[in-house]
Image (cartoon, rainbow, N blue to C red; front, side, top):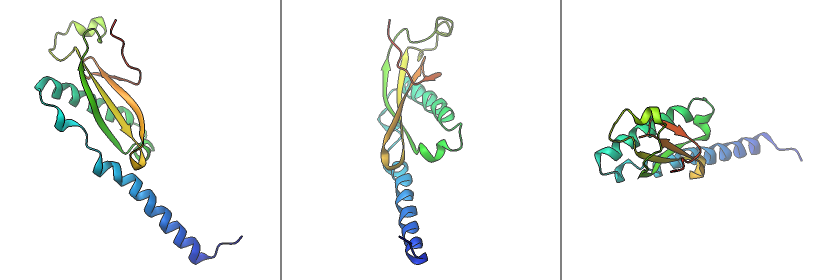
Length: 130
């Protein structure tokens, strides 16, 4: 089956339009989750975790095409989630953990990131509260 040039251009245009909508959708309709955070401590944790996760995820230029949105899903008080040497710093927000979710085109959830130790360290594996 041979596709003529007009049909090829039409199909390519539709494909580009659909992919553009898929990339644009999460940026406009999935919030970053910061508006639901009320306390100052949780704002610090969420901000630190969001910034570090964003730097980690967007380290690869191609990742900017795949990961189209980040959202703070949860902030929780989780004592003991810091390494012992970091826990000695004594910041008030060190016992908090932030959970962030990355979204791909069309708002498809991709991976969950955990900002440990007050959001200063980001990992893809949840910390256990031992």
